[in-house]
Length: 115
Figure 1 (cartoon, rainbow, N blue to C red):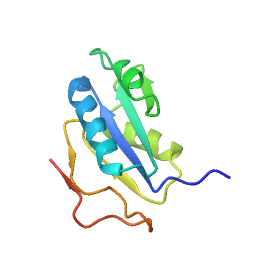
Figure 2: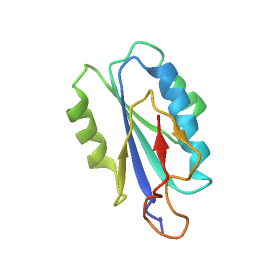
Figure 3: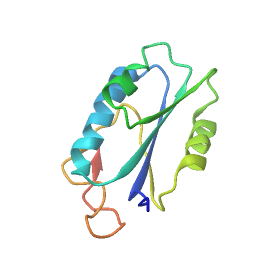
Figure 4: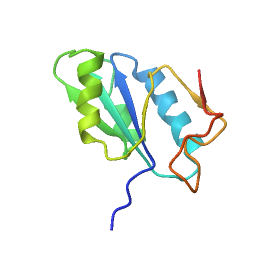
């Protein structure tokens, strides 16, 4: 039986892949082994988006042929997610210190911070 991840994380990217790499790394550091689906909706970037799957093979990267805009890209990822909780985060953000989800409950920690 597949367990539904505690949270789906959606990141819309457009030519911010250097920042995106750091963002994803910070997400994994704060999960502390807990489950999460990370979806990257890329809006036709030309700055090496293929690096994401090389470094983070579990991240689901969807490469749009054209820039479809933020809202449409978010909707694409929302249709793929299964978790009751969703975090939208910009690629130039970093999650710090506390885990994204409580270890025993599917609820957000009140001290989650992003910068």
